[in-house]
Structure formats: C-alpha cells, structure tokens
Image 1 (cartoon, rainbow, N blue to C red):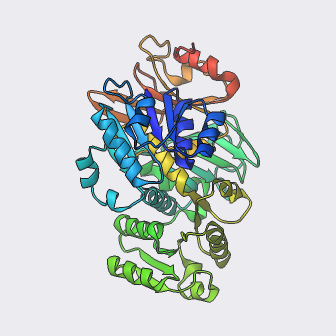
Image 2 (image 1 turned 45 degrees about the vertical axis):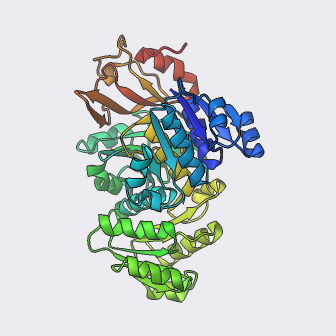
Image 3 (image 1 turned 180 degrees about the vertical axis):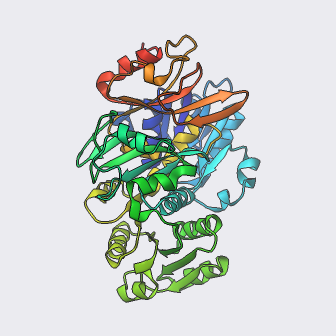
Length: 459
C-alpha cells in the first residue's frame, strides 16, 4: 500500500518504521530539518521536507488529482496541520485518512471526524488510558494490548509459585487443556528466544502470550497466582488528561470501584471533582508518604503516576510499590525510560507516544478494529504479517503437520469469511486457508524457510 505520513516526531517515526518494515511504500513529510535528516538516515522511506498542511508539499509526496496514495496518516504535534492535511488528501481522492488529535475535544465525539471526512481521529491520552486500564484489570500482566474485543497480547512474568515454573510448554498445555494461549516469545534476563514445545519455563521469565480475553484472569493466575484478583480500588496521582481519562474509563468498566485522584493544582482538582463526582479528588502532594498511607495506597489494587514529569512518575510509582500497592504503573514520555522496567521494582511503564503509535499501526494492519500491537516492538524477533496465497502448500494442513522450522511460530490468524472478520489463536489442530492474514514470530535465520513453508513469495 502507498502511504503518506505527515510528521516525523517520535510517533510518526515509529509508524513509518513499522509500516515500511511491513512492506508498504511509505513517504514521510517533515518540516523540521533535524527530524527529516534523522528519518532519511535511519528509515527506508522517501522523505519530503516541508509543511504537511500545504498542497504543494503534499503534491511532492504524491497526493495529486490522480493520486495513487491509498492512505494518509497525519501525526504531527499540531492539530491544525493534521486536520488540514487530512482534508486536502480526501479532496484529492485518498481513500483513508487518520489524524492525531492533541486537543481532546476533537475526539470527545465522532462529530468532528465525520464532518471533516476523517476516518479515524486518535488521542494520545485516550490511548494511554486504555492501556493503563487494561494493565490494572489484568493484575498479573506487566504489558498488555488488546487486539480486538476477542483477543490480546500480554506479557506475564513467571512467579516463583507459578505452576508454570520449571515445566515445559508442552506439559503446561497438557495440565491446562481448557486454556487457549500461545507463548510467542520468552525474555530471560537480557536474552530472548522463540520457545519450542520442550523448552522449560523459569521463574523470572517474561512470557509474551496471545490470549483470549474471556480467559485472561485464568491465564494471569497461571503465571502470577497471588495477583489474580478483582480490581477494587485505585490511586491516581496527576489530574491532567491521562489521569482524568484513566479514572473515567475505570468508572465505566468496573462497577463500584473506589478511585482516589490526587493533584497539587487546586483549580484542576476542583474541575475534575465537578466532572467526575464518583471519584474522590484530593488536593495534595503525591510524594507525601503520610498522605498516601492515609488514602490507602498500601492496600490498593492499583497505583498510577500520571503527572507531566517522567522522573517524578517513576519515583512515585517506586514509592507506592514500597508502601505495598499490588500493582504500580508509571506513565512516561521518554522512550529510553522503558528500559528501566527490569531494573526498578515497579510493575509497568507506559509510554504515551508508543501507545498512540501502536493504535495507528494496528489500524493500518487491521482496518476497522481498535487493535493495538505495541508489544511487538519489544519482542527481540522478527514480527512479520503475511497473507496465505491461493496456491499455498500449507492450505488445509493442520499446523502440527507443517514443517515450520524451530525459531518460528504462528501467533495469530485473521480470517475473512462471508464479509465477516474473525481472529483466532491457532493450535496444532488448526489449519490455514487462502487469504488468511498471519502474524509470524521468527528469527532472522529461518525467515525464508518459514515463508517457503507457507508458500509466500520472498522475491
């Protein structure tokens, strides 16, 4: 697909990199010379320098009256640039346009996107809130992302008292035949590998697993037995957009939940209290240990630090964990802080820009769904999406009978039948059909062999 992306900041850069790796023809538009140079040096995409809201610049990117561009993604930090770029693209015949919306009023209702002809408007704060809410509900997960309303990709750390500790994947399946899940990647210390049926799991391993959402609590209990309990109370520090959206989403999703929201800004507290009357809003300092104890952080099921300061969020999440909170989450902007997760005792770190870029990427990979595939960027193996060709030798053959090499796994299948789309997690008894879209997890040395088994042309 021919795609134009406006904006080469952290979000646009990530989207361009992923879609280019997927095999799409990507043109990136960026006005800032430093960002444009970085994209030219590090990405396999064409870079056009200029303002993405100007028709002559978009024309250089291929958006003309007889355009062959099939999609425009506007993800700069300026709403007016994004909206105008989408409007121009639609006028020129681009079939699908996606816009980032910094101002939350643009995504409060669908009116703006509908009236402007924008197919999808995405908010970074709402993307973060969805990921945080999912992490809080799935207590045992350290990363999580829903693929759609049916399945998700989760990262679980194997606890010492886990029944999965010290047994092979094959034995784990035999002991839990009712659970449908597939571990596509295991991170052990600083190394990682695509597991085989006879590989042993160890305490401390991080297992990246596709799971059905209706079984997520049972699967969470498998890895983290002491954390598989219903979420009843949450403390949030930071009453800005992320904190507000997280509290609002938790209220909608979990009946009777007790939420304490703390902020140092008195006016912000008053505003949030008037808009979320079911939330206990407190004017105070989230770093005040005595305040946190009085508000029950020690017995809380979840804690979220969502101030505007990355370093403060990490410290607050660390403090909450030391006070005894069940699950502690820090929201950050700087990508390099994601590396700290294994080094400091907090449960999860959520990056605002990664959450947003993953929503956009998955909207391209899986049109029409709210899927997010952020975790795939953290997996140290190649993640490839392929379509099973009509003449595939794998068509109709049970996966257990395919000669898929060690170092390769089929993680997820999307099948279109009778105008309906269905996602399923394959087992050894599953078989593929022509047209199935398959997500492969594969090491570099067996990519060509794996694609050949599926009949996918590597030329």
